[in-house]
Amino acid sequence: MNISSKSTKAIVFILLILLTGLIIISARMGYVDISLIDIFKIIVSKFIGIDVLTQGVGNSALSDDIINSWITIVIDVRLPRILTCVIVGAALSLSGVIFQGILLNPLADPYTLGVSAGAAFGASIAILLNLGASFVSVPLFAFAGASLTLFVVIFLSTTGQSSYPTLSSNNLILSGIIVAAILSAGISFLKYVADEQVAVIIFWLMGSFASKTWIDVAVTLIFLLIGSVISIIFARDLNLISLGERSASTLGVDTKRVTLILLITGSMLAAVSVSVSGIIGFVGLLVPHMVRFITGPDNRLLIPVATIAGALLLLLADTITRAVLPHEIPIGVLTALIGGPVFCWIFKQGNIR
Amino acid sequence: MIEAKNITFAYQTLPLVTPVVKDVSLKFEAGKFYSILGPNGCGKTTLLDLMIGHLKPTSGKVLLNLNGVSHGTDILSIDRRETAKYISLVAQNYSINFPFTVKEVVMMGRHPYIGRFSNPSKDDIEIVNRVIEQTEIRNFANRKITDLSGGERQRCLFARALSQDTPLLFLDEAFSNMDINHTIRLLNLVKKEVKERNRTVVSVFHDINIAAIWSDELIFMQNGEIVCSGKTDDVMDENIIERVFHVKLRVEYNPYSNSKLAYFKGYNG
Image (cartoon, rainbow over all chains, first blue to last red; front, side):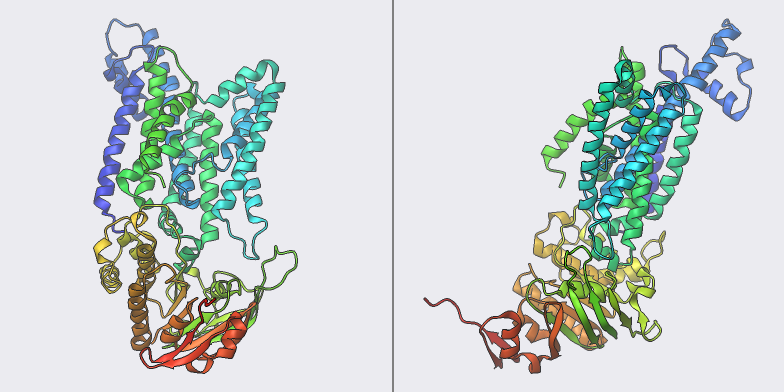
């Protein structure tokens, strides 16, 4: 486990530069054409407080109205969407790393434990009860659904164990599948009784970053930061857990406590992601996988790199659907359409064991 | 060195709560190699799990008498990370799903000595290299553990436990898929550690003769209880083994192995 901290820093640094570049390019792209220089000026004047706007934006012949509308487009529409997407991509990928680590299964992802199904069920209820009018209730219900599901799954997998209960990965995966199956039947039922709201539910389930606000950015960012800190603290314990619970335990890892903490962390990351953006599959499954080819399985390296790579990839996908494709298609559909075949290819190559 | 005092353990889920380990008291001393023998399901692995503090006994205690801990400390009362400096375990072959290199896996044995955010020290690297030489896994030290055969992987996990450098080493059928050459080499390696560095090895075996050749003392288990324990020469006895395993056998001293060995009769019509 001699990772050179230099190469880690170099990879992280390069990825961060790429990400920043993509954020700026992405902010430039869209229906209204605003030049890169103007994007810079708007961002600088809004966030750093240096008023460069009075020096004129773009063509000096433009009226104040146009400039003001540009500011609104960049600051209130594009940036919140872009940043939410970046954070959700990072969070999904990070929770994928965590789940694959604690479930000892390179095929696990944030959805293996039914967390997403729980969030989807919660959101469907909120939409069905017409609480969707208020912008907080759907995310709130989604989050509550995800958390409740997690507790049920943990409860199911700790009963029927020894007097010193452990969270075995097999139990967790099986409980997750059972709970998810029940919840998807529940979602189908909700859709069935939803009448005209069915379209809203379906659209939400397919995932989207449209009309995200700075509140979404702030909420997801807080969770991502907490999640990153916790997972970096336990990165090496996560390495040891891959030796098996018994061996990890004799190496000084409190396996039950670490598993529980990381399980909650990963699920909260997935829950908060699903609650703001709907269900976006394959990011949490695929990104850690692809990154593992480059960095190897050491979580101390995998965690930071996969987190940034997830952000990068999801932003790329969202920019494609938002600004490149003639028609916006739901991001969840796009990631599944791209990620699915890629996953099949990797799987067939035999790189997944 | 380590002592079990009247430990009993039962899995709560069984409809009839019959203990898997019943009122076992044992004492393992420094500088000795112990083997636990018994039929499948007699509670050997559970007993090991109790001794290493992985399972909590339903009643009774496991006490440590080691340098660095106060005399008679309950193993469950100290931090896991601290325990890891005294006790290491080679578990039965376990498949590892992530492609760590052999070297990385061996370095994991140094975990209890390395701070959460620090890198391995010179000493750690030195110990890992030494253990890799000793266990003769140098020629695949940079390969991925997922690409190795079962026996090779087992040797890496053995090296990992040795790099932990603990006074107590527990082996749970650690040689089950290793060839005879490597089994003998590793057994000699640990025996040397026992004699020269006063370490304690407690091993679960299925092969009575391997146990008899390398162990100072044998412990026979049946239905969660200790049937008999003592010096190898004293307890390598036809009646005891027949009672425990329900097989016919003959025990004789063999000058080549310099130990008593068990002989069995094969099929003859």
